[in-house]
Length: 145
Length: 145
DNA sequence: CCCCTAATTGAACATGGTTTTCATTTAGTA
DNA sequence: TACTAAATGAAAACCATGTTCAATTAGGGG
Ligand SMILES: [Mn+2]
Ligand SMILES: [Mn+2]
Ligand SMILES: [Zn+2]
Ligand SMILES: [Zn+2]
Image 1 (cartoon, rainbow over the protein chains, first blue to last red):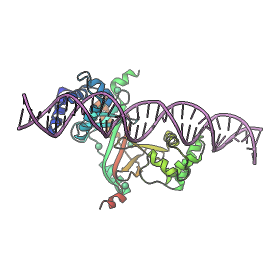
Image 2: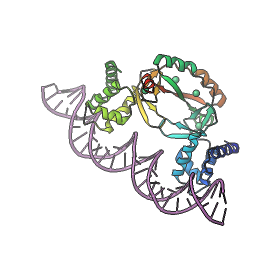
Image 3: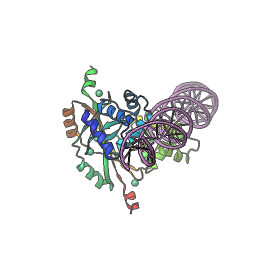
Image 4: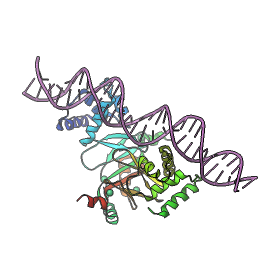
């Protein structure tokens, strides 16, 4: 969550020839600087600090674009609502704090053995997988005591 | 998806002292006999074959109960909507056909090494995980050609 | 077998998150 | 600076799900 991330996000938008508007910049900055739960409403609220006239509609549109170009990953929370987390390129998943919503990426999932076994048992062609770890971040652990 | 499943579902409801109403029976039969996408609206529609006056409200209430008692698992689809699949007891996950929505259970996920490594790297306490395999069922594979 | 009552139901309405519409504004290019 | 396609925001539409409440019913006790 640093300036470098903000620039990478801007680069990615440009690379896909999306215009860099004040509204999009504001959303990007929120994404790049916020630790914790990132849902559309919260992002909109925070983005208004930099761009007071931004509307929820634009936030949703921006998040869609970022998810499309792979800059952002949509997370599914237990209650069914969506949250978003910046995504590095490559095969990653997220570990999400059930207390505060903070999401951190991790890599190194190796499911090939499981996938092969399930595929041969079921006859399915497995095309992909979704994995999320749920837990409690260090801050939320100490708050608990 | 056999009669035995239907009876197991009825047993589970009884075991938790829920009444066996015509509406609930209809929902159970849909769950036990349907292969493929099972969302609330579809279930309601199908259930009306057996119980024409059933309302969506009751379908939702029944699905909630079944999820609560562990007889049913809520699946998260890419678009964010919920689908449901009968669940055996124990630690299982689902493999979902992206073509037709059919969901089959599998077991044998072993993520302990991954979880330990991620936990020590991040300081999180990992409390659980959420895994779904996405793929294409045999029927949908042949349809494709 | 029939009461009784708490549990269940469904229609109507409320809700909340997300998408669509459309007139207006704007980023980026020439 | 002028142009134009892309982007925007307010309002309304949408859609899945939850709530309310008066009427119905499952199923245990008599
Ligand atoms: Mn993976
Ligand atoms: Mn598992
Ligand atoms: Zn936390
Ligand atoms: Zn299929």
